[in-house]
Length: 349
Ligand code: PLP
Ligand code: COI
Image: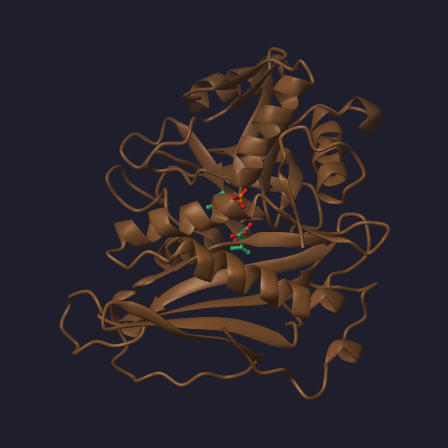
């Protein structure tokens, strides 16, 4: 791998006390090219613009997949990634479904580790803050016909991150639009999944909701996920999350929360959850907590769930009794090397 270091750092432009997601990017980026069936030209270079042909397939047919992961610091400035192999495996599942080449493990992991090592000063040293890392793979050539590209570029960039959603969320159960469909690409981090959610999300925003709570596309009766998060509901003393299927992104945070909750003797069910079961729980008070989770979002609780014309407010639970906050602390403590790592999720850089 070639390393071309930036002559000047831009780190003084950022105020680490006032981070807003995506406002600053670290000094370097990683890229590797896929040409003639081979990965070549891996390089770490200064973050900056790149040039592509206007007929690159990514611009026309959307061959693009990405990942989201984070690097954390502990009290001694040691740096850790959280379950990076899961992101590596998932980007290749996404790539396969979009007929893109898989990224070799050494290219993904070596590029990632070296980039984070070089840009380690960009990782905020505060509990709950981190460096958000964005690996992505795009199709870089084409002949304007709708067939897969022969050339691709894999890149990694990063941005200092605070919490992605600032407040408790008001979510709307969606019955018209869909995020994904059976047999489709909902289980991947395909760029197009996000593009297609923008319009219905704006409509929801205009009606006073922060995010959509997606339901299945064929019947709109089963809960799937919300925004960029998997969802959990504390219903009848059980923590329920819709089981990942081909409509739902299998979240690494979600999988981690399931393991942490089980370790904490909370009863967890990964299963289908219907809108009617949820609404009944909201009406009879048996639904105590609802929250979304994801790499960017961490854990964010829902204060209002809207269904048709009714806004249901979740019951008030004192902070020290909230399971969502307890799980969030368990997760962050592991990520920041403040507690044991029973599942060996941390990777020291
Ligand atoms: N669902 C969607 C649609 C997402 O974009 C994300 C974010 O990555 C998640 C769920 C949560 O996944 P993870 O915990 O791996 O970040
Ligand atoms: C993540 O949590 O990694 C995401 O993908 C969210 C992102 C779309 C901002």
